[in-house]
Length: 225
Image (cartoon, rainbow, N blue to C red):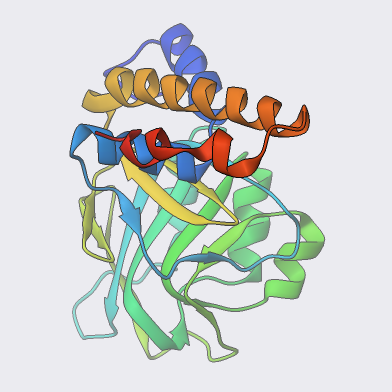
């Protein structure tokens, strides 16, 4: 459990975050002038799943001499609390995998909610059969062995152009991946709730037969101002 939040507060926050999709969170960040959405990251496993939770980080890089001999991602999986999400800096690489089936099995058994890799992954059929959500940039069968090494874990990482720290929050679904910091939790969720309520009312109006141009209107363009 993160040291800066009690178990009760963490459970309540996780429940609130889980209520929103990435588009609503992204809109809330826009409203607040914050950055967090990462273009190009997509859901690679077959099931239609949305994941959300706190982040455990892994930093990958070139396989070079002198690095500790450890399997990439294993330490983060062992340290992760149930419901947390492993986030892997892979520098956008698509010429070698930054995640595979054995890691998905170990993560699923340890209660990890999913993984987000800024690069390529492999063994996607296996991860899909496990029901384990994998997000990334591409699929490739090439192993990390001899090509990629874990440089660190539990440290700041860069995903796209967003700096992500251990304990940050992330939401990932069919529309992409969005990060935000613990220190912005309350204001992001308050704004997300406001946006969600407004859009729910718009959906209800459409289902009751209101014309789309009337429902959207000029005010829709000003929602984030």
